[in-house]
Image (cartoon, rainbow, N blue to C red; front, side, top):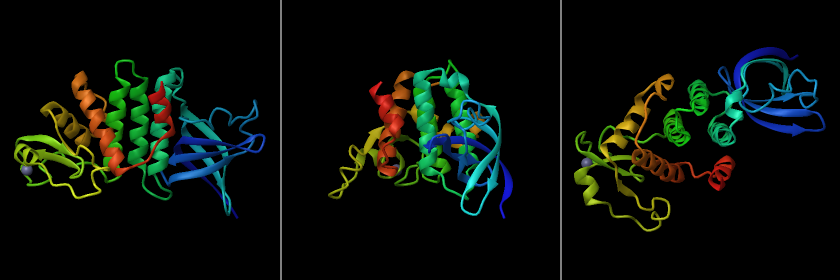
Length: 258
Ligand SMILES: [Zn+2]
């Protein structure tokens, strides 16, 4: 016998099934990532037509059968319509969804990730916020939420808390001036993954990273940075993700081709 459960969730991914159905991937507050069938959701008069679309956030009533879940009802509180009206912002949004789909797991506590996506999509909707900054903030926080964030509050080599002025991809965090200038001997084979491993980081870029890692998700998108700091943050995250995530995202490819 199956039972009905209600979850608060965001639709991460949608797959067409057969002629009229969809299979959706949800990021839920209660059970982590889940997949469910939305029967008839591609019929023009279906009550699930809009709900079973990427970015839809709200309450989903699911019928839990023996081997799969089916959406019985959905009550969407935010479709992120302003986001989907902007082509570029939409692809940043798709990137965040893809990222969450890649990182999140079933039956896992993914509440922090759900909150992060929600706030990040809202930041993409805000015209005063640079999408490239939203991306860097999201990437850094998402890595931290998953326990893979860099250490930026002390030197990753000697533990010093002062004069932090370098970032090392291999050490996964900040280095003090003395350790950074000394450099590191690279063993053979590591160069490809950790290419150009150590580089200078201005105090303001490091401070931005410290803020992102320590701020509550709801307070994340309350600061601005200069163009050079933004470029540095984006560069650090690009190398960091290449080394520690090593996954190529479809939406990112489209964004880069834009
Ligand atoms: Zn040091």
